[in-house]
Length: 273
Image 1 (cartoon, rainbow, N blue to C red):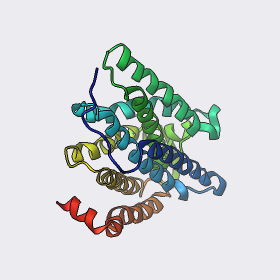
Image 2 (image 1 turned 60 degrees about the vertical axis):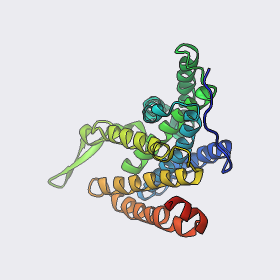
Image 3 (image 1 turned 30 degrees about the vertical axis):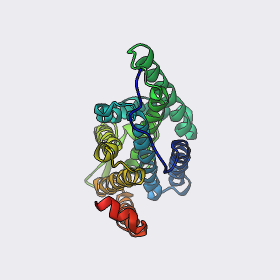
Image 4 (image 1 turned 90 degrees about the vertical axis):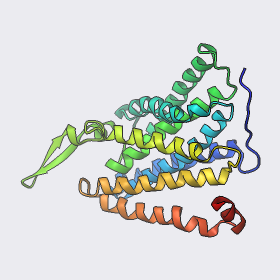
């Protein structure tokens, strides 16, 4: 039987973070459908915002899970989040699901996470009270984060869009699987960047002086630059790349540089100390 050696005192309750993270992520993902309504790819940046919100939720879930004394499992928690989430994400993007893809991804990821949590507790005998819920949440976070990455880098997350790209040659546009999100291994880049970003904040702030606001701020500091970098990545490959880059830079400035200005002076001094 595991004994919880750390507790979350004060701050925002995990349930509120979970609900806010799920709703905020789904809203941002659905806002990327404005690309379809306007026949542009200018709203792909909402996928990056969905990714950041999901990462904030996921980092706090890792804190809840690892409060039971499995601190060495923090990096693996990030990997299992995206390893289980990618299954749901790919299955949910099939054409048959249409606009319900984010909801389907949530349901499928919850199922995969629940199964993994059950196996961990009842077959591997880890016996951690928060294991089933935490792995269920992290699978959802992984799936929705990857959908956000896909929308940010390709303008959407339909299966056809993820597996088919285009290459311009001599003024002609040629279809190319190798230039797509999946065929070009961009999904592997998203996987690794997301897995690192979700586990690093708690890993970097754990200990006797752990504070919730510090960890969540660090998560945002990990997420917004990823939004920025993905905008640079698609700057030359897609017509919405410049929009992603500009919005990513604005998000970076707001999330990284302006937020500390509005923190209470006492909290800022505490973080410096």
